[in-house]
Image (cartoon, rainbow, N blue to C red; front, side, top):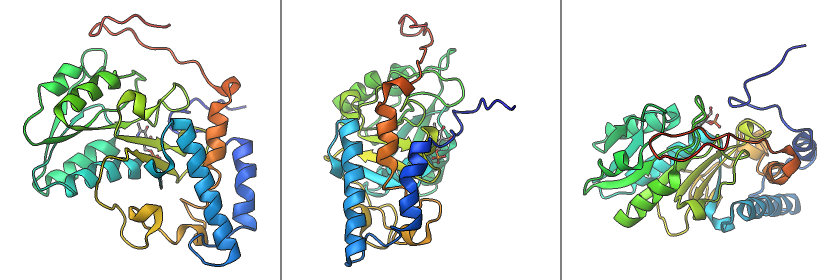
Length: 281
Ligand SMILES: Cc1ncc(COP(=O)(O)O)c(C=O)c1O
């Protein structure tokens, strides 16, 4: 028997998620943008899923955008902010972010946008004051992950978001590794952009979410049809049943899975010398 010890990289799909998916892979294969009966029914399913997810996060459905995963959600937030700016854009992130964040900042810098990367302390924590020290007149966005995918430390995103709020700066957090292990409510944590990936939480690969606060306006990410309230086009996915697949419909099941307390894992916080907080461990 082999033992799989890499759940932070990807999880086995929950049987209930697989069961919820099957009808959409077999019978309900239409295009939700179609005007016929099946298309319309699929559209209703998508909006039901969006509502369930919004309930879970304590947000409005219109703040939930379906994407192809955590990588795309991070790209969407960062590029969307930079390219919707007046050209004066400075972002701040940390050196312990996933490449989906770090490489996106590297990329936008080729267009004349600017970014600073702060280092963690000796425990791997991002000190809120190290973010504050890098803020300048052009700073529009700060991206700091909630839980780190390699060392598991949990950043004090609330303290960082409060600094951002008082300075009129948007705050983005990659919560791919904390969702399912902790209570993550974007409004309570002061997060303007929140990233989720389904395959880290017993769902399928190729589906993710970007929460965007309703007061924040950024550029459209994928150009084409008017799906996702004209912010992310992708008419093909339901037809081709490829990566992003029909997963829009069953992600609500994943969320239901997450709310099932018996399946939640306990999570131990590391002791941080920098903020003096005690560990729960
Ligand atoms: C912290 C973090 N962000 C983003 C991603 C990328 O997510 P996805 O595989 O859904 O693109 C991962 C996956 O390893 C991750 O751990």
